Image 1 (cartoon, rainbow, N blue to C red):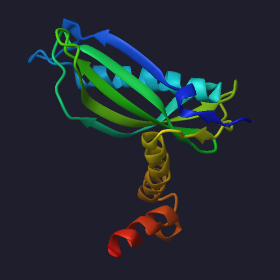
Image 2: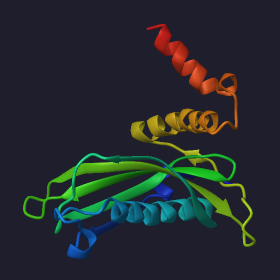
Image 3: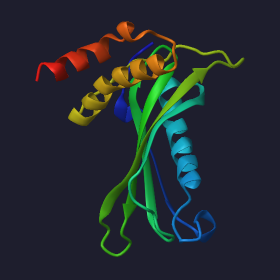
Length: 174
């Protein structure tokens, strides 16, 4: 199985925020944004794995800025790291000013997808090759995020989370 670059999985979707996608304040529903992120993230995971995928977890969502009705919204997703059958996908959301064209990052999320075969069993996925400084930063952080998730779920003991231990040791030494 040949490793793939982050850019090979990148998926981008741009759309308008319509009235039926907003709350009573005229801002996009959080659930609508989550659905858009899930769809674009799914495409990135499918591109990387070459398989059907399912969303295993929404690990982190940050709703930093409201997105008003009529906004041009771009959702960008790409793999940050692949494990055995799971893939961490990092998703950035941008809002574009329709007059100036200026883009502002409004939200971000981290989803986990699992690749499945035709009978619904997890299958191995290719490794990820990070190239840019941001891709490398997200790649390195992915293992710590996975270990933290496993510790919190009780699937591994804290002393087994070597990346987290190293991070805390570095913080103590500062």
